[in-house]
Length: 154
Image (cartoon, rainbow, N blue to C red; front, side, top):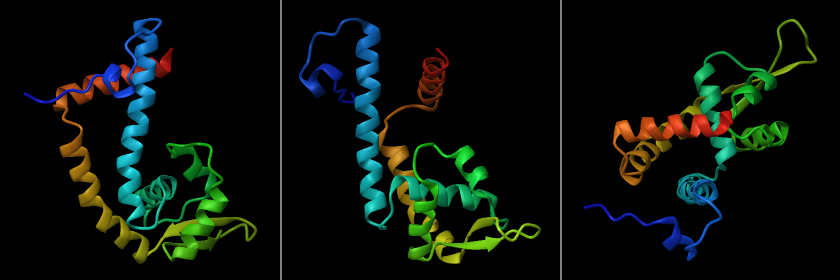
């Protein structure tokens, strides 16, 4: 039988105002827990979660370059300063800036071979982390995703 650590045990709190409050605390705690695991993977490659997300988005559009608005629209975390993120990725040599064909003042961004290579290195680690650490069946993962969608819709 799998060991299940209840939120009450994790945060040493046994009383909540309601089940809704308990669920919200659990979502917040679980977000931090998952983020910590991913942060370790990214740290080993000198990346942040936001930088990794930008690289994944750019890989999805490869070989085409993308404009900053296209990238921002599909980012998981909508708050980061995309210009700063791209400057760091450019400094690491993972992306390149491309001048727009028709408007020379617009800059698009494309992942390069080095950026693709770093994602190729990270992919198996992320796949293993998702597969081995979360302990959910495919049906449970689908149910959880549906419940989180419902939570955001309220």
